[in-house]
Length: 353
Image (tube, rainbow, N blue to C red):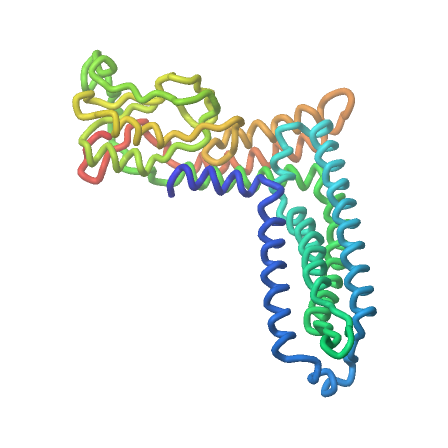
C-alpha cells in the first residue's frame, strides 16, 4: 500500500471529525430519501397499520423540535465527557496516549449519532407545512417522522453505551491490553518468518561497492522537519529494481529527520535523476509525531511509560506495572520465534537492492 495512503488512514482513524462528518452526510441523504418516499406514498398507508396514527403538523413539529433540541444538548455533554477523559488520561497515564482515545471508534460513533439525529430532524422539520387556505394543504412526512423516532431511540441506546464506555476507557488494565494487542499485531506484521528476500551472508554495502559508496551515490534528502512515520518499502524495492540501483536507508520509522537531511543514498548516482530522487523522497512520509504504524518501539514506550508512572511514589500501583510487563512479554514471545531479518534486501533475481 502507498505510504501516503497508510499515513492518511492513520490520520483519519486518529481524528475526531471524520466518522461524525460521514454520519452527518448520511443523515442528509437519508432525510432527502425519506422525504421523496413520503411525497410518493402519502399518508394512506397509515389506515392499514393499527398501531400507527396520523400526525398533525403542530404535533410533528413538537416531536421533531424536542428530538433535535435534546440531541444537540446530549452531544455537548458527551463531548465534554470525552474531553475530561482525555485530560485525565494525559495527566495520569501519559500524554502520548491521547491519540488512543481520539482513535476510539465508540466515542466517534456516539458523537456522530447524536449530531446526525439533530441534523436529520432539522431537515425533516422544514418540510412540515400547515394548511393555508384552499391552495395549500397540510403536509406531514409520516415516514420521515417514524425514522426520526427510530433514530432518537438509537441515540438513547448509544447514550447508555457511552455511559458504560467512558469509565471502561480509562481503565488502566484495559488500556494496557489494547496497547499490548496493537504491539502484538505490529510485531507479527514487522517480523514475519521471512522478510523479503534475505541473503545467507550479510555484506555491508560499503564492503560490496567499495568505501566510496556514499560519494558515488545520489543523496535522497528530506523536504521538511519531522518524525519518519512510514517508509513505503514496496515502492522503494520497485524503483530500485526498475532503475537497477541500490538504496541505503539512513533512517528508520520513529527517527526525527531535519529538513535537507539525507534519508537514503541511491547508488550509482548517474542512474538517479531529479525525478527518480523525488520518487524516492516520496517513499518517506514525515509527520509531527511518532506513530506505531511501522514503529513497534513507540508502542513499547507507551507500555513502559504507563509502567513507570504506576511505579512512581504518587501512584504506587505495582499491579499495573506487572500487567504492562506481561503484555511486553507477550509481544517479545512473538519476536523470539522469528528468524532475525537481515539488513540487506534483494529482489527476486537475487540482486542487492
